[in-house]
Image 1 (tube, rainbow, N blue to C red):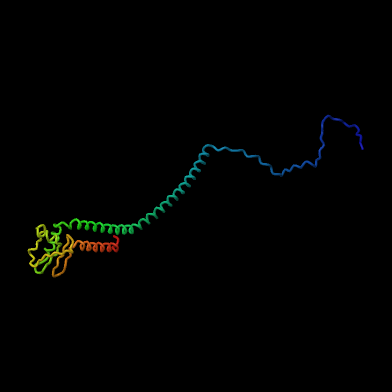
Image 2: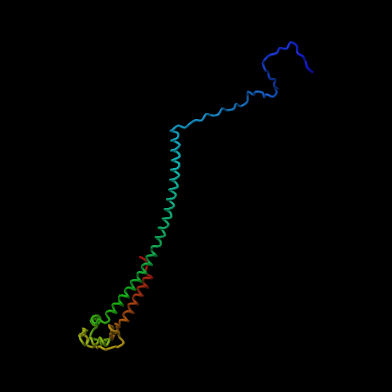
Length: 219
């Protein structure tokens, strides 16, 4: 129902009527919202200090890693050197045995070639026999056996024997002897100067040397 107001004053101002309960009360004890901090800029000295610190940290880290790598390499190198040092005596022994075998084979080959080349050389036979005859005395019977062809050389003067101090000295032919070979019989034994026999004795001697080389201690 409409109510008529008496003596009402009309104004041109606009007024808004609001619900007081809709506006929250102001609390003085409430925390104030902090204002945003202002951004600060680094100066050149601070930037250089940060760069130097970062460089030093990287340098220290690289130094530690490099030192660890060097130590690891030195460890492996030391292991290799120790293994090589341990293998040296065995290698020396193997090389010495191989060298002994090689020398023995070379000596045997040279001697065989020497005998083959000089089996038909009457001067070589003459020298060998005379060396043996000098060591014999005249108080025993001595028989010298030669190849028939070398007896012919002796008769022709191409071989000269120094046996004047031997009274019981006899020379006989033996077809079983090779050229360059000879046999001397005395009361004390027989010396076989046959080439094959000399080579066999040399082989035996070389085999003994090889056997000693196998059991010889490493210096």
